Image (cartoon, rainbow, N blue to C red):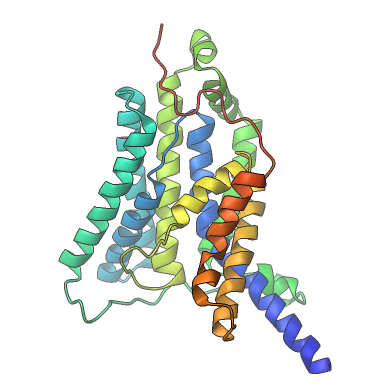
Length: 312
């Protein structure tokens, strides 16, 4: 009985620690998308942005030997893609859903093509030494909690800080108030001198940069390598997470941890040789996505979401 309790506690601690790690890229991508959607822009293409930026970051880190250079390149690539998407969605006033899907396909195809061109040896997948956990002493010594929260890589800690910073920016600053005003009533915001286009450009660019860092997490902090389609639909889970979190950074963090727990449990069950077919275990995070969208508490989205603003 004692051994069973010990093993159960070890299992629980490992699952919770893994859930924090697995939640990190979801939270980063969803947080960036929350900025865009609160301003009225819906970017369906973040899955593709994550994939392409994950490759760019890995290629930069692999060639230079500098992980932080890879993260920077991923963020800059996401920023550039976000600016391009904003040009179509805000300046040209193109349909945002169709444009986002086109960006998803374009970025996914570009990532696969560049991977084949740059790393053309199909028999050997290049690898790098990824970001290692950095224990936060003395907090890492706290029983259970220390392992769960304070033994992660620097990108995970950064994601937590970004959530706190975003709560301040979106709810306590003039910029945050302008973002909400533009998302709810761009006509009213424009009438008092707020540049709707500038706010939307800024938010979509922030969203692209954070999606880029989320993609870099998989290749530089989680796996230490790049493979085609490594995001595995998690960009779309991040889109659902924005709705589940009601466009609130704190709730997005909690929702990300919930998804992380489900993902960690299904992975551990596969390792332990569960009798449940692995296909059903892999489906678990995506089934949860459908469940939270169907049965989760609903809140009205920003009034101008996905609607172009035509002055006058």
